[in-house]
Image (cartoon, rainbow, N blue to C red; front, side):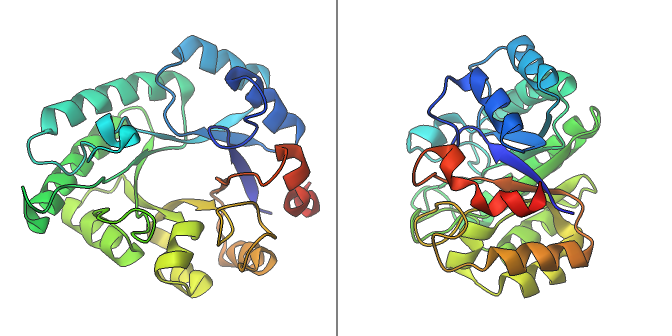
Amino acid sequence: MPKFSSNISMMFREYKFLDRFEKAKSSGFDGIEIQFPYKFSINDLNTAKTSNGLEISVLNIGAGDLVDGGPGIASIPDREDQFKRAVEQAVEYAAILQPTSMNILPGWPSMKLYNRQQCLDTLANNLHYAGDALAQVGVKVLVEAVNTIERPGFLISSSSEAIEVLNLANHKNLFLQYDIYHMQIMEGNLVGRMESIINRIGHIQFADNPGRNEPGTGEINFDFVFKRLDEMGWNGWLGAEYIPSKKTEETLQWLKPFL
């Protein structure tokens, strides 16, 4: 039986942030994920988590200026110190909140300033560093591929590229965050591809395409995808990371068969 987490940075936005924990739980989710939790205190987040009997499936490691449209820090050759500080902060949060995983966004390095291999080497070194640091608190580290149709220039845009950089980083605590929405846009063949790399995947996120809305609004057959993942023996989280097309509670028909 699949286990689902809700990305409360994107879902339940009708409510104040800390109230979203209870809304996710009462809607049937066993876990939540947060994109960037760092403007909230660890104690407030932990209280909201534990009082609602929730687990945290994934948090992002800080990404510097990426959230404001900048290149980020994970693959930029002269931002290694900034990345290490972000990892130190992530470890502080992970030690208390105990997410299953923490995710790294590679970012948009400028190919006018650096060549691609420089950026891949930097990313691999940073991944290895994060893999070591977060292993100390029992948390997996992920790297995510993001589609370049909507985000031109993103360094890692396919599962193959992500696996290549994981191989380059060469650390047993590193895995792929496979985002069904992004990978449907970039490569398709969702079930076949996930089956071929299932042992390299640490977390799966989903939204329908086009639109990045809830399952049932686009072209992806989620009933089939979830069924096949169950048959593959996937026992990790499936993270709902979508933009609700209406009030969040009204977009959860897809979840009802699993409650």
